[in-house]
Image (cartoon, rainbow, N blue to C red; front, side, top):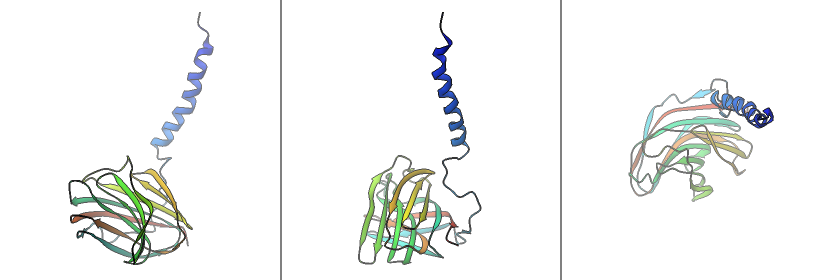
Length: 196
């Protein structure tokens, strides 16, 4: 005759797993602020094109220190290799001095600091399994408090980056072309302020 003690580990696993699955399904892991955004991109959707070996940057008239900033973007033309980048700009002084959080159609992402004379890779280009490749839409979200910023791609945590070179500035969008021109459509942008 089997003892009911054999089922105790299974019951314990179910008691932990079921609430966790329900919480995840209800958005427990979603770092998006629960309140409505303080600002939404009024000029979106918008298509931006970058020429080879250049970056196209557009800044919004929103200067912040601590914040959450989110965009939805989808490439509409570019090389089939996916060798390009697009994403969001933050803590920008102008179009030549900013931070960028970008993904590529090849499944890579990076965080860059551009200072007008060149760029510094805070997170070098690397693969991330939750990036939708090719001409699919991606959601990028960034939450910054002081020098620390948390990055999510399609609601999945990607990385944390720390850099105190600039602690405030404007937010915006960008497209980066390497060998071939690329066009990206930005369908929405939202900003939640936490520095008021």
